[in-house]
Amino acid sequence: MIEQLRKAFPFDENVLDAMDKVPRHWFVDISYAAVAYSNRPLQIAAGQTISQPYTVAMQTHLLQLEKWDKVLEVGTGCGYQTAILVTMGAMVYTIERQKSLYLQAQKTLLDMGKPAIFHYGDGYEGKPLLAPFDKIIVTCGAPEIPQKLLAQLAVGGRMVVPVGGDMQQMTVVERLSENDYNVTTHGHYKFVPMLEGKAERIIKN
Image (tube, rainbow, N blue to C red; front, side, top):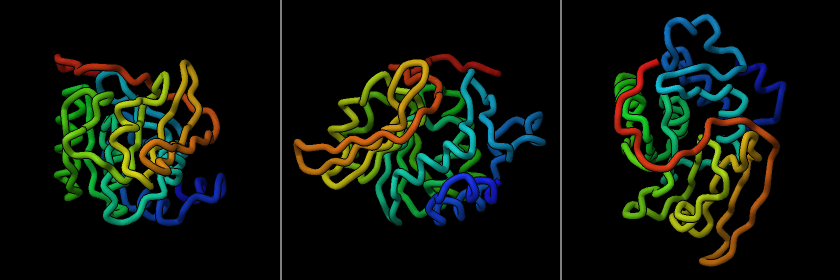
């Protein structure tokens, strides 16, 4: 998987090294074990997906993560992206609206010895009491750049978010000052939609 990624794009080697250290098969159902390292998204609980490795690598690469960065992740999912961020030395605060995923991801990362702070809640709200964040990563498709998350980004910080409808443009927002931002786009991707509120009941596969 890592060699395929290296050939596909000049990713930051620190990103590839972290992905090499995080076993992707831990984050998918055993029925997908044989294809866990293929470059494709896979179904997880609650009707969600684990992004294909190329997409995970790209989002992490665009984040330009530095050790000890304070990172807000919106959309914990199965916790795979969370584990990569932690492996790279980030202090990760992650939000998930699906309770089954929130609970499972906590257990998986605890079993792996990769500490992160988990929150069950609405990703659109972010965590204003914990802001500002050096980096923000959104792992679901937002119809537009979430303004409440922008307000929680530190000056000098970066947010990576897929923006759009059925297909999204990978968007990087750099906060240049209190009121100034630089926005760039980096190709089209397809994510599950970013939804408001919490999913109150546990949904099985």
